[in-house]
Length: 614
Image (cartoon, rainbow, N blue to C red; front, side, top):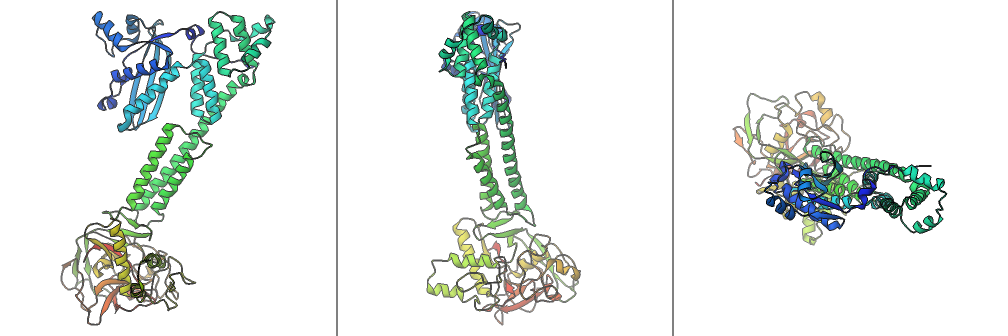
């Protein structure tokens, strides 16, 4: 036969109405700074114990009066057993409270004054997730829970544990079973149950009597008989419990609760750890130059997993854990919102909806040389960029341009014509149809070509209007085409060589689509290596429109933030970077070309900057 083994309070104590007093709690310095004193906690604990109706409380007012009458000064230094004897309380409740790392920990001890050196009879602890703003509310919540646990009978602990087990609340079940363990101390349970056989007691009446009771109610009834000295009655009840299906399984259930608690905690830890890993990767991805992962998508994955965990009906989640998960969700979502809060210094930026990534470019300078095959670095001038800006990580794609065209639902016929006339839809090389869908053979990540300078400018104006309306544009900044100086400064990425990666044209194949390795159309965005600042396709793939009008003569004096000439004799704009059809010389950082601003070609595209308004 499987025997129950209970440890903790003896039966004689269970029968008493405990006379209790609450001594000052010790509090950490962190709580003291938040105006939480040991006296305040003791006062709240006294109130919660009184609310249970299970104890006779020597109030703090009475304690103060007795100490005053005896001219005794009170305080945390007074021993609990001394206080109990002075005020006539058999049991003293005291403890400590600490707050660290958003975790509130409260420990409450019951001290038996009659035992040697004020021995701790029972100790209860509880931890809660809290913040500085709600610390007192959480403290009262913790004290109430501890007081209720102190007031529970062994039977209530048993029934509570079984109920929690049924609900899958394994941590709470373990806690209830532990409270049961320390309340029960049946020294002679084997003797008591053996008495049924020895005395040939008839248990039929007892079985019928307790049939409608819960296991916990039957347990408390047996204890009541023991306290009254009714050994036979108690023995029969314990025997029935011992032989009942539920009682036989109590130890197994306790083990099941512990295993369930361990599994739940492991699942919780793994879920939170995985969400944090994705969140941390999102932070890293936001800041890295060669972004391989979308930080917003990582945030969405993390939040989705956490919300699914919270809504899982098969997983019991305590208030503490639920609050911790909710706070992590809020933290991740705040970071995600920050991703879309607009450009910020030294931080990458993704424009929502159109999903256009920008790389931060700080102030600096570079030397302008001739565009000869071998750069003349002896005769050069210095161009300074004095204000930060952000440049598109990639050339504008067909998918992004398609989104722009489809999003302008409010245009009238004339306005629509003004937009469409800048795009050569009829050409086979144009990635889009007249109905704004992808042509066969093109992908969303194909660079948008066959768009005039005017068409590229229209895109930039639309993006400026959208982001300004959303409140995401820094003061004095717009989305536009880069100046020739901004483009070359970004392309060089700190290099004064022929290419961003140096002078060795043999390495061009790693960084660019051009005549030697290209096909009959541009490659997809980002297929080659980026430059040192994480910007792709600055060499080759497609020529890129710049904001400047074109003139033959290059800069010959040092200058800050040049904007180019006021006009061009041939109404042409600057192109930079070369294309998939270009030779090596056209791919140099300093190389430049020109084309009519109303015209378009199958090897001309553009990228956008978020930069000071010109």
